[in-house]
Image (cartoon, rainbow, N blue to C red; front, side):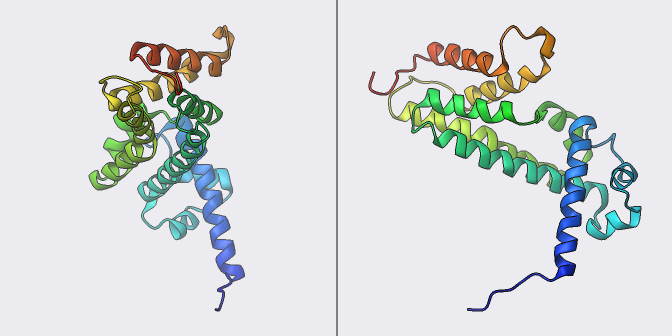
Length: 206
């Protein structure tokens, strides 16, 4: 079986694309889609405008879409791994999810849905929104659904609870560090405990 080896030129292109994606992601995270220009990204990297178009011929929208898809897939993989360590226990799964989200820069889904996505081609926007639900909210929802199917919680809206948990944890980033009486992790755990108590969660073996 032959093994294909990337050429030096292909490796350079890949490395350059990664540098562009990393730089663009840092700017988009701070300012959003509308407020970031390709010129700003190029200047940050010391590249020409033409160099960005070489790697992303679709321009700013193509670059943003790839940045966001990469970010969402990273979150999806991180959440899957963090929640798997909960070994099927809903509380531990949700705490694992909180640990992952707090360890990462905030996703700012509200800005994404209200400002960034409406500025994109509708097909691109739908794809990215689909990934948000599939890879992030959907993972949390599946955990609630599994607990409900196992009889450890009563009737509840798994989707609403998943969105609520995600929103509560993400909103902890809005609290200034100086105003925190405890660390964000402890606060996230308390949110989770309150929600689980509210839906009558029964611990495994309980």
